[in-house]
Amino acid sequence: MTDQPRKIIVDDDWKAEAQREKQRLAAQETARAARAEPLPDPTFAELVNLVALQALVGLGLVGGPGGEPIPAQPDVARHFIDMLQVLQEKTANNLAPEEKRLLDATLYDLRMRYVELTGSMGASPGR
Image (tube, rainbow, N blue to C red; front, side, top):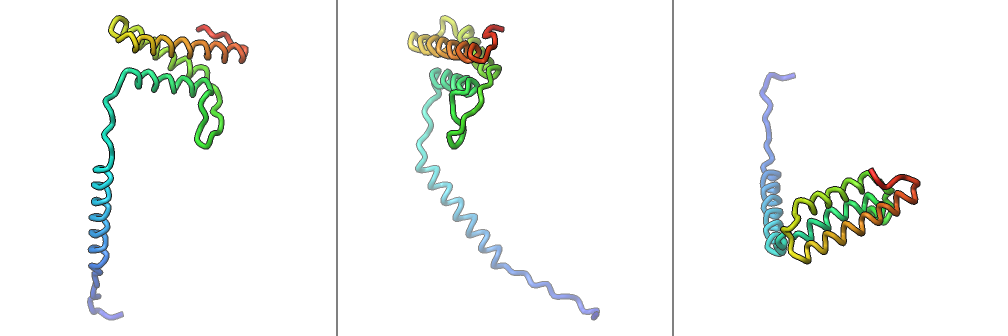
């Protein structure tokens, strides 16, 4: 081996290419954000539907990705139904008539489906 110092060659092309790629991605993100529509204001109905959907998943009434069935989990369903009941109790006398009807109807429907499921499984629907 020789005692001569090695010369290090730095390839600056990759730096320039990385900078161009970063700028291109930033421009794409800016264009995507400009095309995106703003989300609407949240509503009480959306909140009820969000929790109700989780209860339906627990009841085994919603398919998974690709349409495969999700097994029923009565405890999960009961938890989300109870969450809606808490929402009902905490918002008593503070809802518009249509919001109250939505919450009451959703709770009634989910409770009936829960009783139907647990009855068909041979379980007791009450806690």
